Image (tube, rainbow, N blue to C red; front, side, top):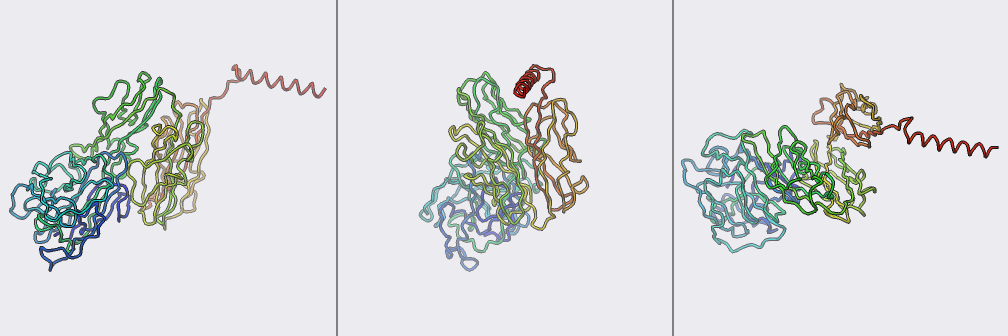
Length: 565
């Protein structure tokens, strides 16, 4: 039995049942959650506590689960045992990966496991340790209850399991969540402070859900049925997650298959970026296909023959811990012999309040397939990476919606746009969703069209001219500015609102998003707008094209004069 639980757990998740989203993607889990009902869909019994019926009857509540996005490869976990106590055992000995250890117990972990009489999951036991938060990966199938007391040795845990850098458990094979660090704090003493190397949990093939709850009973052996005396909540939040990537290019020309492998990865509340996050290319990449560890781009040389390449591994590391906490994912590159239709997915942004609403009406609005605007007829949409609870994506309409109650903050999510006629021809990009407090001061940012020629260098314009904060003109005093997404080299936004062009820029139109925030507001009060920067090379007055146009004009003038005569 677990008393007075207040554990913070970090998990990669998308769509957690019964949870409330926050900027750090925290979700609350009842301490009565019975892991052994995972996947059954059954309502836990109210009268199965045979160990000590007088202190708390019942099997608890159905365990919450996380819907795992396609392509999720690995997640990392951290926990805090602040305020945790266990029935009859007091406070745990340090922040331990497996819950309470009875005072004076030095017994090695036990390999004994047993089934719950009502659920389907094999039990988890460490000798003398109990009240442990645990988890299990499942696919979408409904599980049937098994016979009571059906003992098995499916999980044989040793002390080494507590300090593994990587945890790999298959479907229907439960494991301890623990404190999520490589150090066994029972043996080492002390408590973690957030800088320790984290363990990586590999997501098994076929997993679509992650359930978590407690393996709770006397010593966690035998039936696990005494849950109703557990009190408190477990607060779950994302820390780090990595997802696989896929990209397509045409053979015969140097090109980029994936713009940035980090787009659908996640670290500490946002898309991973340097200097905190680092990238490394794995071994076995074929000649001509490389990962730019600075930009995250997967580049394909013109010499690469048509074919499918991958999975090609890469590693993302969080350098805030010592040693760095790393997790790996993979990239698959399709090189087509025939020219591919260009697919362009551009960064999107939108703002709502905590009352909820539609942040982006249609992410396709600024996307293209070939020369045509992206529509439901020529393209498909899919969620990429992790999306927090309360922020949803309609893959038919392209709308990004926010439910009422989602906490104020900035959320960065990802989606994939694919050509309808060639499903493997896809591009991935981000959507920034800004959720402001319902009572925040009004804030507005207007879009800014700017144009420069090849010889221009300097400030192309100022974005603050049509922006406002609390019904007053936005200034560097009452507002702050930040670039959102990727801006081309040589173009930058300064604190005064100037869009500065200082480097060589190819001809074209650039849609650049910026964020305007009220200075000093807590929580942040922000909105976004787009700078449309058009760059064109002027036609020389004495150049062949200009002279040809002049000749045509003169010919037209002569014809007009003859008509007048």
